[in-house]
Length: 385
Image (cartoon, rainbow, N blue to C red):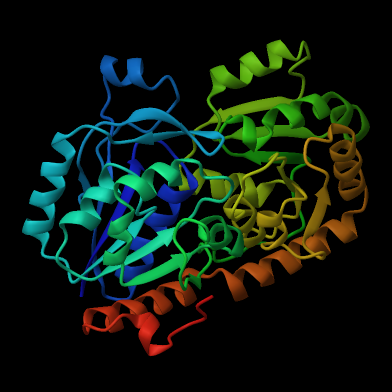
C-alpha cells in the first residue's frame, strides 16, 4: 500500500501537526506501508529570512518529502501558522498526485488552503482526514462557504480529541473517530536520577503561555533553585519577552529549535515539563511526549490537557495564574518520591494509550477498508462519535 500524507504547513518550522505527520510516516513504514509527505517548505536564504523571522530547520528535506511551495505567516487560532498560499502549489500537487498514484491520501487539516484543499479537490483515491485544531476556528466560516463541499470527498473523518471534534460540530457535522496523536516513546525512561531543572517545549505564540511562565520564573528560581530550559521557541523572541517583563534571565537556558533526538534527551534529563498554555489546545501533544519520557507535567487546566493526562501523572493549575504555577512547581520538586511516582505513571499511560504501534495499526485498518471502496465509517470500524 502507498499512502500520501498531506500537511498544509511548512516542513521547515516545527509544530505539533508536522511532528505528528513525521512520526505517522515512520510508524507506517515500519508496518511496510510506503509513504510520501506533501508539504510546504522554506529553503534557506534571505527571502525565507524576510518572510519568516522565526527560527526553523532549513536543510534538505528527506527524500520521502515532496515540497510544493513556500509558505507565508497567517494568524490562525491564536497562533501564527505557516501555510502555502501560492497558486503554483496547486499545479505541483496535481503533478505529485498523478506521479505517485497513491492508494489512500491522508490529509491533515483538510479545509486549510492551499495544500490540503487542493489535494482533496484533485485526488482520485480514497481520502482519510484528520482534524487537529480546537477553539472558535473562525476561518471555518470561510472554508464552509467557499470549499466546504469538498468535505463530501472525505471517506473517513478523524479528530485527535473530543475538543477538536466538538469545534467542528457547527461547520462539519457528522461522525468522527477519536484517534489521538501518537507519541515518540524512547526505549528506556527512568523517572529518577534527573538534573535539577524544568523544561518548556513549544513555540513562543501567546496562547502557549511562555509569558506566564516567565512571570513566575523569578519566584520559582528563588524557591527551588532549579534551572529552566526553553526548547522550541525562537531565542530572540524569548529575549524580547524577558526584556519586556524587566526580569533577570538568571537560571534560564534558551535552546532554540531542537531535533527529535535532542528534545528527547532534554525530556529524559529534566524533573518536570511546564505547559502554561492559556487556551485553544485540542490535544496536549507536548504533554504526551513528556509522559513517554517518564517526566511529570505541570500544565494549565484546559480541556485538551485534562483529556491527555490523569491525576497521577502531574498537576493542573488555572490558566494564566503565575502564582498558582509557582506553587505547583515548588510542590512537585519538593516531593521527590511523588515526582517519581508521577513520572512512572505517565510512562505507563503513554505506552498504553499513545503508542504509535497501536495507532498506526488502526490507521492501516482504516486505509484497508476505504481502499476497498466502502467508507470505513459505514462498516462500523472504531469509535465514531
